[in-house]
Structures are given as structure tokens and as C-alpha cells.
Length: 366
Image (tube, rainbow, N blue to C red; front, side, top):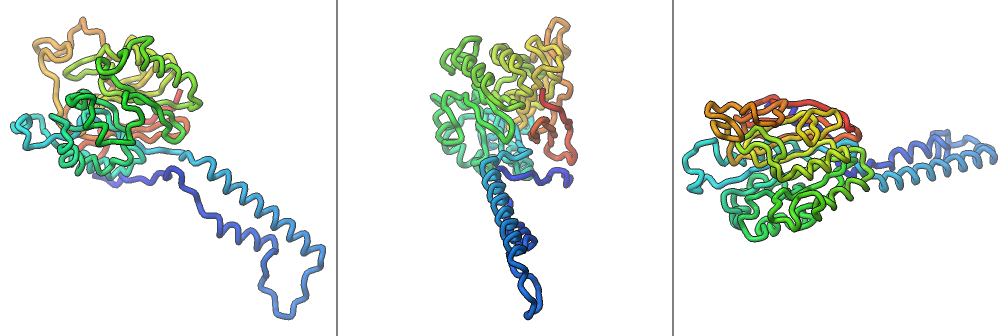
């Protein structure tokens, strides 16, 4: 892996010391003694008064600057590591065959830890095959659990294999802002909306006018952030084995209406990046760019015949109306790095065992 993987980013809320600057400026203003000879005559009274007034003004300005710095702690850039479909126990009989390169959560989480992100955006399906309390502690914990206090956890379908996803909510605790599975929070200058695409498990579902969709529209209408990122588990668009998922169509429509920049999902065991799209799946410069990052270590799959609308030869049917990603990788585990800047973002997809990013780019906010 190259040194490009480790780059310093301002730490959220960091305040720089002002003591040295204050002392130097007060000295320049003449409030402290200078290196005069022992017998030098004092400065005239008028000059001393002018210096004192200047020094007092400098102190007041510095104090105001420090106060304003404490009131504005949003970092200029926030580094996010995003990935879903993560941990599984290699001793689980479901993964005993060794097919599909199973249970590589340690290797992928090593990539994430080395990135030293401010946020790990977990895109659902954190623990396979049964998300038991002991599995979170002994399998997920030593891997991605190293970033537990930085994790924003999205609800996946694996989590609901336990009633009300209660082992998931117990493990992540305060990192989950609302157990309904949808909420919003700010990441530096960006606004993040976390949504729950397990529509049958959410009161009212995911359709237009549902409590979740209505909340989303209200939240996006009222945010003051220029740049917005969304996350849910099941991708609206996909070239993977499941194909596009219509259950999130109305949520995607709402993102598009309010000019959201990007949406991240997992579920499919691959990495795919789409062009900005409108709700019909057509390219649109004001559309929503989607990333699918289901590459957290559980498995990766290359679609075959019959998967996701493919024919007997594994090719997409001409009747299948869907966008195709600008970049797709079916063969690697990995993690997506985002750098969220005040009016743009950049991305890099790092794969296990590959030095340079497989996919990278930068784009301005709408």
C-alpha cells in the first residue's frame, strides 16, 4: 500500500494556541520591557500611554478571535470511510467452503483504520450470519469495532434477523441517533441523512407521504448546508446480483428534488459508482450520484446468468431499463474514502491487496 493512503486532515473542533501570538504582539505594542540598557531613560508619558492603548486593543482583538474560534468548530474537510456488508465468523458453517473470499473483515478494517477517518459510515449488514451479541463482540469488535466511537451505523437487513434489531442497537448504543433507523446529523460543513431501507420494518414504509419520506423532505427543506450526503442499505440502482431496488424509489425522488449530492448503499457484494442520475435512472448533471460499497469483507460476488435481469449468458437483457455504473468492481474487498470539503468532495476506493486506489475522482456540490 502506498503512502498516499495516509494524509493529515484537520481534526474537528481543534483550536490552535494563541499564547505565543499574544505575547509577541504585546511586545510589539511596547507593553513589556525591551532589551534596553540598565540606565536608559523611560519613554515619554504620551508614548507610554499610546503603547498601552495599542496593546489593550491587540489583547481585545485576540480574545474576540479566540471566542469566535470556539463558536465555529466545523472543520474545513472531514474524512469519511464508508463500507457495508462486513464481518462474518470463518468458523460459521455457512462460510466453511472458502468460496467468494469470505470473512476478510480484518483486512478491510485495517484499511479503514489506516485512513484514520473522522467518521466510519457503516452501510448495513455489520455481522453475518446471525448478528448475536457474542458475535458483535468477538468477530465485529476486533475488526471494525476499533472505530466504534466514530461509527454512524445504517440499518441493514441482517440486523433485523434479531427482533427489532435489538442486538445491533445495543452494541452501537448512542451512535444510533434514533432506533427507527432514520435521522440526520452534520459532518463538518456537510449534512448527512441516514435512512432505513428495510421498508417493511419501518412504520409506514418508504413510499411517498410515509413518515420517513415526509421527515426526509422536511429535513432537506430546512437544512442550511450547501452539500448533503445520504445513506441507506439497499441500493436504488445496481449492476450486482440483485439489480435495482424499487423500494427506495420515492426516497431517491426526494433526494433529487432537494438536489442532494450523493447517496451511499451496501447490500450488493461489490463496489459500483454511478453518474449523477435523475429518478428515472438517466444521467443528469443535477442528479444524485450513487455509490454501492458492499465490500466490507463478508464476500464479493460476480453476477452470473439470471442475476439482476441477466440472460443465460450473464449479459444484461436489452429489456432491462437501468443505468450502468461508470465504474464497477466485483473482485475485491475494500473501503471507500470520502473527503468532504466545504463545496466539493473527493473519493478513492481502496481494495485489499492493491496499492493504489482502483477508483478516484473529485466533484463540486450542486
